[in-house]
Image (cartoon, rainbow, N blue to C red; front, side):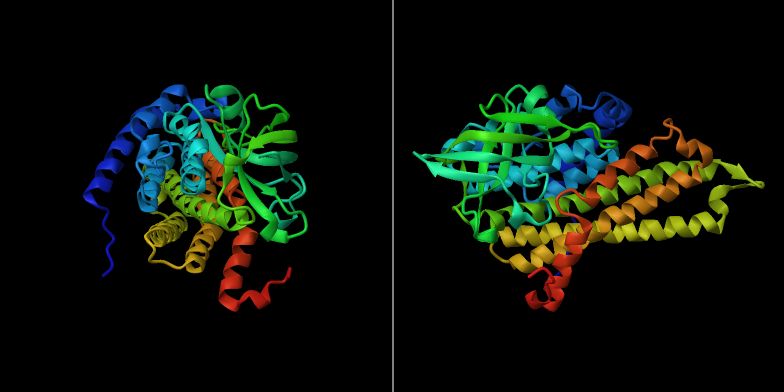
Length: 402
């Protein structure tokens, strides 16, 4: 039997997150963008609500939250912070904190995850490199095992949270980092290491200047003979690609919810204007040229939202041992493929309805437009999502790059 209801516990979580977001986040979105950071009081509040790293084990301060509950929280955060900074700060740590908690070694987890849930450290994913992103098998970062340690050389780029780790959070944090432990084995030579970045010898961080979603930083770090304890290996050697895909699926499902929520929040903001602003003797919301677009966007976003929750539900069932890995991957790719596009189109039209005011910084919807645009790339490009869906529909023999 299908059930479109959240549990009573989930409803309570939603109400508490909604109240917090309206009170603490919504009034500060311009400040978040201007100051290029999420205020400490917001991070502290998220931690006090148990939301940071809420997917990790209770022994580290997490809630062991299921994917649907994570999506519900992300929806409320995104509705309040249309810049996408706060929901990104939240979702990245939920997805990759979960992976580290599930596959990491206890000694390594104890040094990191309790600080993540306290809002004192950040955990993210470091996969992309200057010359390799979607083509993950071609990464150059290499880890050589030597005397009980991994010696890592390479560079990661276009990752979230680097300034938070290096400069803003007291305990720093680090990344679930994709490395090659066997140079010539394609994806089968890929492993995952947790690499702490702050004050680590041999690491040189880089902070980039984004034109949107400025409240959470983007950048990278170069590694020269960086020594990482063997206990920081996540999962088995050579299984890193497959473990990473599990994390990407989780993140993609949450991103779809974030995109729909940001866009629907933007449309709600525009609807108030459509009822008030008059042209040719009528509120402009009376005209079909606007009503039809509004209706179409709303329906598309509702479809994205429901597909996003279905993908997260499939992740939940898989976590319980009742789902299919490939079907879940396909569902997450399908919704990630359309979510940022539909959201961007809806916000773009909403800006148009405001006329010249829509092109001023006083109209906040430019923050939403730039925020969701980041998700055309983040956690897998739209083009890669199409390849994944096509592969699952036609079969692996129809993959063009093999």
